[in-house]
Length: 425
Ligand SMILES: *Cc1c(COP(=O)(O)O)cnc(C)c1O
Image (cartoon, rainbow, N blue to C red; front, side, top):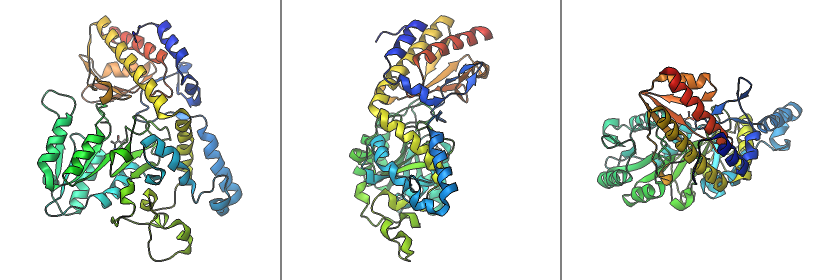
């Protein structure tokens, strides 16, 4: 498609957008009487209008039924989480028995590492990406410590090559080979939070398995953003948060995946009553007998008031489907890339997009180095109703979330960006 940097052209694209009605499903913060241009759905997704109804339902059931709500609520609480299995399995490419919702992301990764990071004197190393999300780094260090190993020795980071912004697949694969039978676990992001690079999870999983390691993924920036086929890729485990692309609200619950091949195994785990055989859960027996499936990793009974907004958002994903989302995502991201290049040319600035240019290695996010521009430009954007995210030294991250951003947003962003640069100079 040949793009144009005009309002007319952007509005034409919006008219033809099969997802255009979904913008109206979300609540936008207001700036001078109009919707902000929201580029931070990769950090905290907007609130869907239907969410309040889901929360109110739980509040009402609690008020009117109290403890009876566990079994007699509109959506009974004791198995409320089971409503997620089917729609979530479609989002992440799994069987319904392989997914569940529980806890929060870092907690789930810790719990899954209890099962899948079982270091021995010989096989104790973890491979991860350089500059992984800080929470993941702390998790790796503390897990390694917990098992009595030295993080310096046990954690192997795959680095970017000098002068490059992204990690090369060949470097990941050769490091996996090299660490070989010392490798216990590969735990990578699905999409790097800083650069937006999408990793080839299928190939990484195969490589890890070839040397006898388990392979898991932190899908914080991948779930609801990219096409996932966790089951077919043979991934051992994964977890994601729901408040980024999945719009479930601040700090909300996580989803997790455990491959079917591990359901019958005797993997050690930290158990709790919500992971116990569901038919016998209320018999209060002393002997733990896990549910066969991802639900067998659950510990506590679930925070229904958190799950309600998550369920509302999952309903939207189920209506739209990942294929339609991905189709718009690729067009609108390319349009944003085009606008950035046009504006850079018009004002003589050098923006450097550090997100990979090839469509298979990027998704919704463009991370842009604003060479020659400082934080004042970011502040100017925020003051003018463009919500972006600033990362040191001078990178802005822009996520044109396909569910609710418009092509007109991209055009208007370009105009504000241009004014911001000219204004400074
Ligand atoms: C956002 C994010 C997290 C956040 O973890 P929480 O436990 O939900 O606070 C973890 N990992 C990655 C890669 C993230 O992007």
